[in-house]
Image (cartoon, rainbow over all chains, first blue to last red):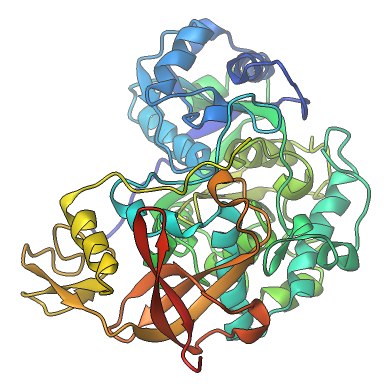
Length: 389
Length: 136
């Protein structure tokens, strides 16, 4: 295929909402989702009856879901969408849903779609491990050895250190910046500033990753609303346009990851930049999935914001801070603000808020473009979108 | 509360054959009769050329430590009594990468790309191919 086509500038995000909850014992995650869908629709000036398309991915136990979870959520919400998407690529899913919805809207099948998520990652009474696969089939050769989500990302961090001389202190700088952004966000899970020493001296979880290299665990949710250009221009909120999109699967089992220091964002980012007709230096800010500090490091390099192996210098030069070349995770990210299990929906919501000039965290003055990159599973799947106003 | 038993894969014909071999002290990988490349984990078809011409071959059990992580905390209760332990990826000399744990060595004794060799260890009803530094 010589050229991929995407309806750049034809579909907008017209509503967005993030639950202020961070701890909600006794609240079922579908109840959180219901509030988020209502919140996003109210922000858009739309009603439940306007929802023609619906997407969610909540099949893990703390998310309330089962294999047919989208059916349960639609039933719970009391809506009648004619277009459904429960593509499940872990935390990247909601960025993928946005891209899929844009294609369905541009094709004329639907006019309005809602993407939503909720989970009680912190308080769920349902016991859950953190395996991203079962042990029937591909996982049979990995799960009996005792991997965890953190240890999978830790393998990538170790290899990056070996190949490029990366240090724990360089990774820690990412957590420090996210906390500085979170300090401005009244809803963030943690707001007290931290130092590089705080990060590298925090408890070892799976070496070389420490506690503060890992995202927070919360009960929360979020949702956003997409609409056609024609519909968006009749609504009150400033439209945030979908300009480009890409998605890709790398691997699920860590033994299938040929290059531990690059993610599928090499491919999803390539497609997102190509469909938007843009280059990395045209991006004003970014929301990069920060399950762990190493996730951000590999994403900066895989998307081409800095050369391979050089995220440390890129971060040390102030590029990811407000006022830098590419401020990231302006609400505090998953590392400090909100991560109930999957982060993608919050990265989308914060991109919309930032481009409207309404970020609850750090404001990027004059931002016209924002890139969102979701990473799900064990560095498994990515989705990238470029938004603009 | 007692620790849950270690995960045992639900069987299929490939995992049955692979774990029967580990129980006999043999580490199997697949070789494609069409393109002659090797692959791991075992599949029905070649992941490189997609041919239906795979055969088992026994790996030498020697390789290099590609990466490793000492797990100090895990949410997976079956392993919570075992921490700290070293989860690892090993590149076998035959050109495939396997998931494993390091037996009998701590993090201070390990480095990426160091030579390692297989050592078989029982875990419940399974026999797992773990690895140790080659100079042991």
